[in-house]
Image 1 (cartoon, rainbow, N blue to C red):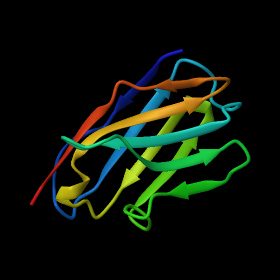
Image 2 (image 1 turned 30 degrees about the vertical axis):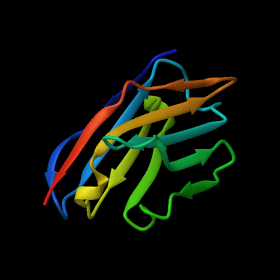
Image 3 (image 1 turned 30 degrees about the horizontal axis):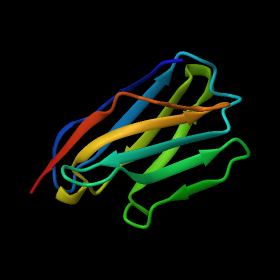
Image 4 (image 1 turned 90 degrees about the vertical axis):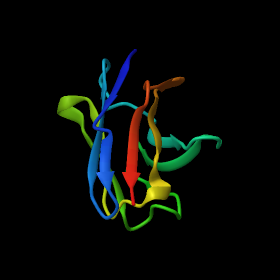
Length: 113
């Protein structure tokens, strides 16, 4: 199984980006779909998740600004990021769990002040 993350880039503070994570496997039956990020010099941290039964959770740091969603027909997980701030600068990773966890390669988001 491969996950291809894309959509990162350089954006000014206050701007928006949408990240995508396309899987080589049908995501309809995935148990959990999630986004994480890792800022320079910091540990990887949880951002958002969506379970098979529709439960959605966000880290407090992104609640109200980021939205996780999915398109089963495209086998793609999304993360819409609005009101970006410099502290959102990080490599963003997608993770999808079927029986085990699979990680995307990461996509870099840089927010300039």
